[in-house]
Length: 427
Image (cartoon, rainbow, N blue to C red; front, top):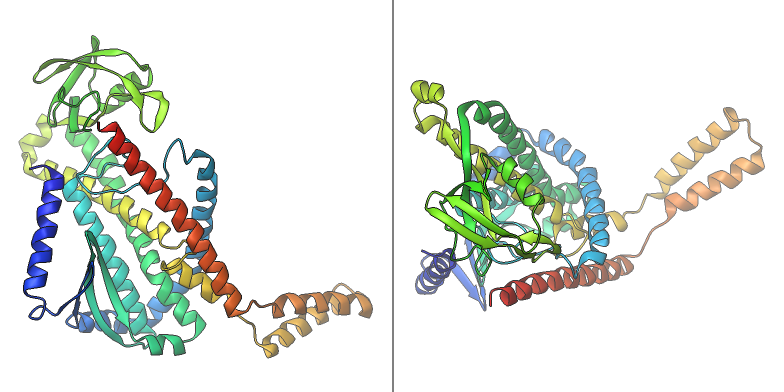
């Protein structure tokens, strides 16, 4: 079944069941939004938080500057991408198992769905755990479906959040993204161990396996998913590395004679939708692996292939958690990064704290550097102004709102451009 049909049927079934049993399942329907709430998981979240609330607080206190760092990195890359926006979109819709011309990243169906599930679960559970560690009640936990876009949420008591200290709120806001980044690091470590220490010794490659064919591309109707390619233009292709080398030496307009497991196929390379100067065949592939005889004799096929698929799953868990974690710290609303920066920009140091720091600094200038009273007064006065500086909440809100509108407009343009170009290339 075509993957898009799978999604279409799945969402139709979900919407129909939700509308038919909304009262029984406690589902609220507000326009294109479905929302399912439950209180069943609150005890689980509470038990995790209360086992070591100090650990969670320290963990997320460290996470706050990490979130700020990645926010700065993301802003930097968005600024760099401005000059490339009409050549290569920096944002495009991604659906596991769905490929289209100009698609930036193809995510496999099953690994992608499981990876996205870990993103949602870890992100929202982390918000809930930190809320409970800070003594804030959780009203409900649930799932949402905005038309066809799935999501999840943990709903803390808003009044208690407002009364919480600034550092407590920062920990709660940073928790989701930092947990995604932590899971990404763990998944990357497991992937590295499996892909570098096990798979090279358990498998060998005898060609490349076509994993997907992009619709309306040069390969569409010529190659098929599952074909094995072992020779192109008389050159033996034993693995993906050799194929990549061959591809990098190809040019637009080259005619490829491809020896496959289903006979000889001919493709003429076109220009890449993401780079008009690069050749484009329109299929995705990876090394076609076979279990080595010595491994097969001891472990059979099941264990090696299970570990291989686990390696693939952990790679997508890493990538999806990393991408969502870093995107979510952008200082724009309604992302968590917008809430983090709102708190940071409205932070004010108490007068007593300012006096204490200024006095100690002035004393050090006088005693250790032996500066004159006039100079120490001038320097400490400047420090006082810096420490006492604050921005009104109204100005902060306006600034973040403006930044949010600009950033979301830029991302929306990229998505519309990527989709529109993909549709045009499909005809």
